[in-house]
Amino acid sequence: MNRILLVEDNPDLAYGLRNNLEIEGYEVEVAADGRRGLERAAESPPALIILDLMLPGLDGFRVLRGLREGGHAMPVLVLTARGREADKVRALKLGADDYVTKPFGLLELLARVEALLRRSRARTAECERFGEIEVDRATRAVTRRGEPVELAPKEYELLIALLDRDGAVASRLELMRDVWGYSDAVVTRTIDTHVAELRRKLGENPVRPAHILTVRKVGYRLRR
Image (cartoon, one colour):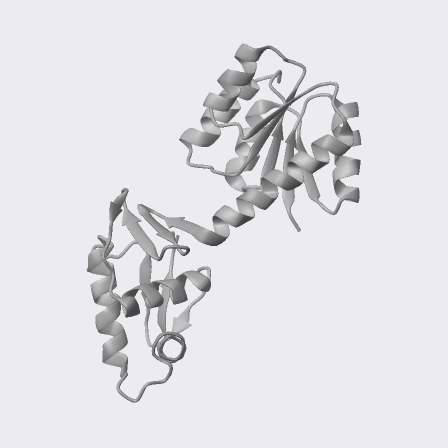
């Protein structure tokens, strides 16, 4: 279930929006001021944020800036009574993905929410990031700090096998099956050698790797 964070200080509007979003199948959390909204987005990142601009404590512009400077890439739909072009341009430049002015049509708002979530899912499926590394599955391209990383086919497949487990441990036997297909030529040492080479190419500290972690006597896991 997609979780939406609604940052809105008008309790009546927040109540109505929450009810309608929940009817559509979304899980909704409400934050009544900008500071609380920014805190909740950082503590438990939602799939999407609906953000008012005129908020107590921390206005929506500052919330937007804080989100993007903090590295949070979830889509943000600004929902506000401020309809001036200058406000819209400012919000979009700060990282808003869509901008809807009050009063608004509920059906249109729900359609925009679904469109943003659909685009976000498509991006996530094709492109993944951990630390300084970005993996584009559509092109099998891997970059570090924007620079290409040349991986051998088995190194790339090993990286994908670890990514697909989303932080869970992959045993050496599972990696043999996923990457080498139980080839007779594959032994545990082959997997360890490929992991060491993958770490080197991704710029990992060989003594204390930040992302591809060894789980003693079991296998490996990838920490994002």
